[in-house]
Amino acid sequence: MKHFLKNNKKVLIIAITIIALSVIRFILVYGYPIHPLTGAGEDDALMVKLAYSKADGRWLGEYRYNTLMKRPFFPILLSFLYLYKIRYLSFVTLFYIASCILFVLSIRKSFENKYLIILAFFVLLFNPIMYSTEVFLRVYRNSLIPAYALLIPACYFGLYKNRHEKIYKFILWSIIGSGALSTFYYTREDSMWIVPFVIFITCIILVTLVVKAFQDKKVKNFIILIVKMFFLALPIIATFAFGEKIARKNEIEYGVKTKNVLSDSYFTDALDAIYAVKPNEEIDCVTLTQEKAKRMADVSPTFRMIYPYLVETIGGYGSLDRSPGDAQCEDGWILWAIRTAAPKAGFNNLLEEQMLYKAIAEELNKAMDEGYLERQKTMPSPLLSPYRKGYGIKAIKAFVKGIWYMTTFKDVAITSSEVVEKVPDKYREVHSFEKITNERALYFKGTTVNGKEIEQLKDQDEYIESLQVKQNILTVLTKIYSVIGVVILAFGGISYIILTVKTITRTIKKDYAYVEKWIICSGVLGALFTLLAGISYNDAATASSIKVLYLCGTYPLFLAFGIITIIFCFEKEKKLLDDKTENQNQDSNIIEEKIKEE
Image (cartoon, rainbow, N blue to C red; front, side):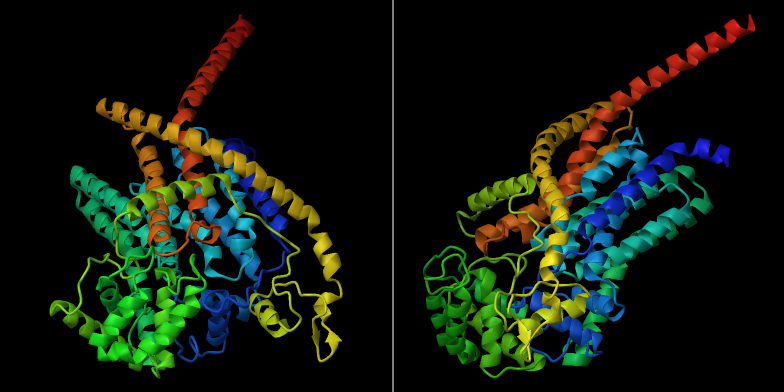
């Protein structure tokens, strides 16, 4: 036992510290109330509604215009937590803690000084985005994104670092990665930002595996190569398989095989055709202008069927955008305006709706081909608004603004006392959020049921008071991170340049010590850049997007990139000094032993 403790002292210290920090982190947010936005009919309230349907064994419930607008994993997860009485906020916290642990575990071999793993873990663990009201306390799918932003890179770094190790380690990371990638991809519609990272790391792993196998030239190694190639592809295979299962379930329930109407349906064809029609007047972030809608109705009999209702829904959703008084609707809301117009026109089930959108797409494309409507270029995805002159500059400005938000943690805050629904007749809606999450919410004073004060109000003031110390600590931590973020941005950027130069100069001399570290840092930076660039373009062309809720995935990526790049850049010199000191101590011990012998 003494021998084991002596040989594993460093590992035990690191493990105990990580466990202790994790327990502290969990305690700090345990018992907080959820933030139930019952009026968010297309967001939080929709997730809760779908979760209840799934828990009742009715898949996603009766089909409505918004049933398949959002990918289904979050309501599936929420229904699971509800059925097994697992607290929602506790699960989200533990999921994020586990992702932090797996992230540092996946790259631990790249640390020269193993104790610096604790520093990296601490910086990621107390990330303020994961105790913010807007992300953590809401019953919405974005609460999972920060964890996924670390978990998926962790799995691929685990595959990369263990590509030449024992095969069971490679298989284990592959299985975890399969679950992470497949569930993440069907949590949000904008999950494509992770794809370049997955391709980048997968290609590097594949090339190095093949090169190693051909260098060894042993039959056994070629068999191992084939096995590893399968498990390298397994996360991608699992993602396609999960999507196929969702599509088949939708076909059984609603009559049309589709994973999501925003990814593979005739609605996307219709939307692409609508975007392709060039408007006669240019309005920022508005592709379907009122005048354009009128011209399309003149040439498309099917579009004409929903046009009167579309004018109405454009007015409704347009009141929510950045220019509510212009009688137009920004592209960020136009999807919903079109979707709600269809049932108003009598198209109430998925099959009827799909035939409607198919006809609209065909008629508009025919009108453009025949010259009745002028065609403009569209983006590869119908979810992206067509590019216009000036969007590039606006996107760059939004990108800079996003960096500012991310590094200073602007608008990131937590509250334990805000009553979201400030009217007494919202009891049923708020209570439905409490039931599905197995968590507590705050109620407006005066809320009654059958003339009696509700039970939750009896100790609400004391409950809020009991959280004050935790809130003070978390508020201070957020302020500290707002300073640390700026430091990490400055030193992280400089460190990456230095690390890149070191990697190039050492590689020229056939010293590959920094290559793996550079690949890890570049992979995280690439994922961060892709995500932030997509959000920035969306802000420039579609709707206001530089907000905490949409940026939530950037915070952990930014902190991870900054802290590991700084460590990788400067720790080697510190390790050399440690080695020198250790050698000096060994020399001193040898001299002392010789003196004793004499």
